[in-house]
Image (tube, rainbow, N blue to C red):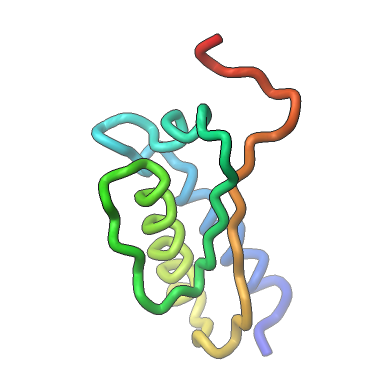
Length: 101
C-alpha cells in the first residue's frame, strides 16, 4: 500500500504540472479557454487509453490530465494497481464572473 505522503506528493505534483503555463492551447494558457465553459469537465485520470484529442480545449484538458497524472504516478514509483480510482473535476465556482466581463 502506498503511503499517504507519496499519494499527496503525486497529487500535488500532478496539479502543479497540470495548471502550469506549459499547459497551453495554440500558445495560450489552456485554462483561459475553459473559463467561459458552462459545463464541468470530469476526467478519470486512470484511463488506460488516452483520449484522442479532437482539437478542442476541453479535449486537450482531458488528454493532458490523463498523461500528466500517469507521469507523476510513474515518477513516484506507484504501480497502476496501487491507485484504485482518481478523478479530476474542473468546475466554475458559483458566483464567479467572467474574466472578460
